[in-house]
Each structure stands twice: as C-alpha cells, then as structure tokens.
Length: 78
Image (cartoon, rainbow, N blue to C red; front, side, top):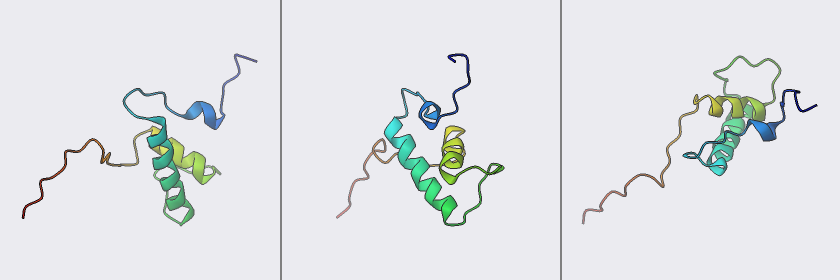
C-alpha cells in the first residue's frame, strides 16, 4: 500500500522552501476560475477537472504571476 503511487491533490502541492503553499493555492484557484470561465488550458485536458488542471499548470510553471510582497515599493513623486 505504501508503494502505491499517490495521486491525491494533497500530495501534489509542491514542497518548495522559496514558494509558499498559500501562494500556490491562491494562484491555482485563480487559474481554475479562469478555466471554468472558458479560457483554454495550455496542457492537453484529458477529462481533468479545472482545479487539478490548474494545479498542474502552476506546478509546471506555466502560469505567470508576480509576488507583489517581494517587489520594492516605488517612491511617490509629489
């Protein structure tokens, strides 16, 4: 049973120290909403649910996003 490949979504969240799990979930959820709205996937969709498809796209780095907390604030000119 331990040798069986795990396909549960719980085990598909990347365990990256630099990227947070919270950020991964937020980006994947927003991408899933885009897919449900009719946007086409960049991966071949073989009867996958939008949530699983979006998680796979984010995991592979196919969904661009910007981390605003890591950018330096721009000075406001008066």
